[in-house]
Image 1 (tube, protein in one colour):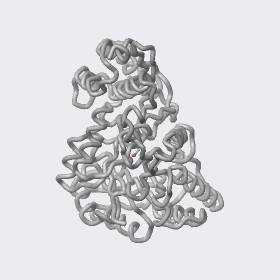
Image 2 (image 1 turned 90 degrees about the vertical axis):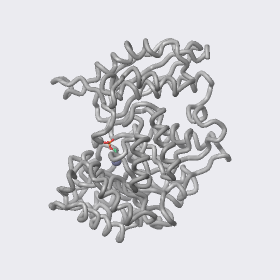
Image 3 (image 1 turned 120 degrees about the horizontal axis):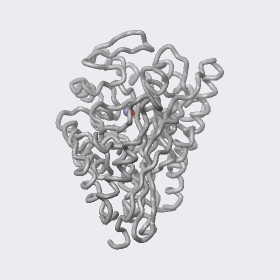
Image 4 (image 1 turned 135 degrees about the horizontal axis):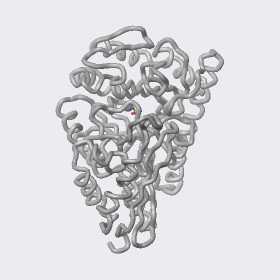
Length: 428
Ligand code: PGA
Ligand code: ZN
């Protein structure tokens, strides 16, 4: 322990991929190892998420993080000083106890998650190991199936499309590297098709193309054509995943689809998605209904379980307790894991373990506000989470993560395994 004793913790303000302030934590150990990590930030956040602490007021849109940064350098630094960075559970328990609120509102989940991640990196560095190896030991050798955004909508593109993410998955790829190569072909084909049609408006927050379309189905149509133009076979090699992020436009059983110019009830939403599942090679749907519509989730899952993977994001907010409830109530079959939704690595891990115990699938996910931080890639490989969602195939805060996975795949060499089609929770 003496080598991995924490001797200093510092917070600093850095900037995220949307040009907004965010929190970085830096941890120093007795052996001299230092490490740092940066908190991400969401835009389509679930109402039960841990609180991203911001200063408020007029400056920087109220989004400055002076309070969270000070919390790291003062209170958190004092509380963690002398503790063993190699004991992540004890560190995280101390952070949770120190904050003392159910949603980490006092110190801020951004302060907590940056610290929790930086401690993990520091412990790995003290042992001379990459984080994935420190977390997973010799068993860690599976590269996750990536879900990569091709088109962006929802809150990441000023509501131009209602559906937030139109993503590509490559279940037929043989390696992570091949999945990225296929994705690159589809991404560029989609951009070219949009430009040819005069429908390219720019890129959305996660790097996906932002199309000027009148309806959501046009985006599905375009993605299918991009797959064909790239010369790939739908379902067999590549397929479509959606993050509807329905909490962004649905409440109390009413769904206001701006791009469609209509309002649907829960049954109408399920019918709309059912038509898409019939007509397009869709294998996964995240947040098909809003976070307050557990009954809708249950009805959707009863109907489509086995046919498509059904993922809970805003509904589950990376909470082990809500994952257990989802399993008991039949809400969905797969859990999205976002460390900053809950605040610490140990709690994120607990949500994953709860999913595993319930026979549910899992996806580690980035946020729409990101940075060069690559911690989530190491969590996926180290913990053996079979899927990874990072955003699109452009912008360096996204590419940093995809490229890190390539390095890990290379480091594993012939021992590397690719999660592939088996990662998806569905019948083949
Ligand atoms: P967010 O969206 O990071 O803006 O909340 C990502 C997602 O919904 O998966
Ligand atoms: Zn989501």
